[in-house]
Length: 530
Image (tube, rainbow, N blue to C red):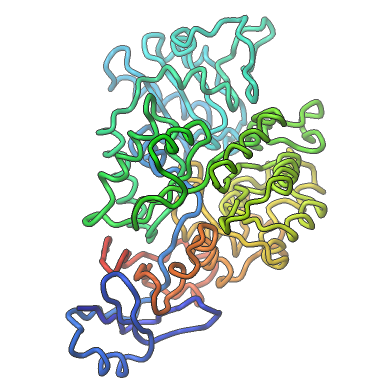
């Protein structure tokens, strides 16, 4: 027995301006769309519930194509540094927090970004030591490609002056060769590996906290990468935590990318791509090919403009990256590869051309920020999808111009060009790195306004409202081969809806992120109601 939804504006998103009066759903599926009187008459004997939208606007359910659900939960639980505007403010907050901790316990804080500080600089271990030498302290940068640790954490990790930089990472040192406490990319693991394991019970709490917040923001699902980071038996423990949270009562569609280090664990468990259920399913093998622009570890074809001796850091040797891709192919797996710099993207393209996937599943390049015409031309000829983060434009400009120079920056973050070239794209937040609110992402995609200096960058790359919403609906479905069951409001598609108090096609661009979520519906059931 079903539900009739009516009384507002219902955007099908099958094409621009496709609007319906009513939708009839049953058992988690859309049965029919049309006008109210027609559906009421046709299904009057089977309608058991009527949902009056009271003039609000319904869209297909928004899905974040790239985030870290557990990491978002950690951000909500841990000390959040993302809004702080100086090193001194960060240090003061750490000093306040340390007083609340038991002696010897870890102080972990998230989200510092020196590029948004009044005086950009990197805090060092000596400053953290002034806060505590009894507590190990670790501060994770907003990009999650760098950390700062105090001397206690460095000591516990057994790191000395003679420590060799790991492949794909860097230990920043002072003039005497001593670590400053600043660890980039794979060097972070020297510290992270000694943090006490998170229990399954804690993971369950973090996932519950995170999903509740995501539902309140209008998200019905997310493609997340969490399975390889939480201690021994991380794959089984983390997958089990998701399965414990999501199901018949808490409905949210979690598509789990599988870090390359735990793919064998997945295979040994007799699992593969797509296995799971409607709310927890396994996805592509996740691989990192480079770092991030903030720490100058994204792998570029030419040196950084503000660091002429540096082209960034490839995460793996070229041979190792090739081995990882062939390993994925041996199991018929698509790959989801983090690639920000143009050299990283080019290398990934070359390898995916060499080892094409022939089973209909879709590879994705995550971020794809720094490109040139050669790369765009290659992308148009490949069966590949791009997983982009619109909010990066708002948070990276104008400082990214210093990193790349004027010319490269003009070619960067070219979302409109991708769509014009018919390169399939989906959009996510990379939360907890950026604001997980999909309306903030949509605003960033259509406005491209810096959150730092309020200027608009690359106006010619602004997306239409329809294009931006499509990235979070049809795009997120396509990238995981779900385009015939998710992403639009149409018969036989899932009954997942995001219901907002204002019409995104009519509200001013500047106020998109001020629109409020009224209801979030997953599988035909209201999972959040304001």
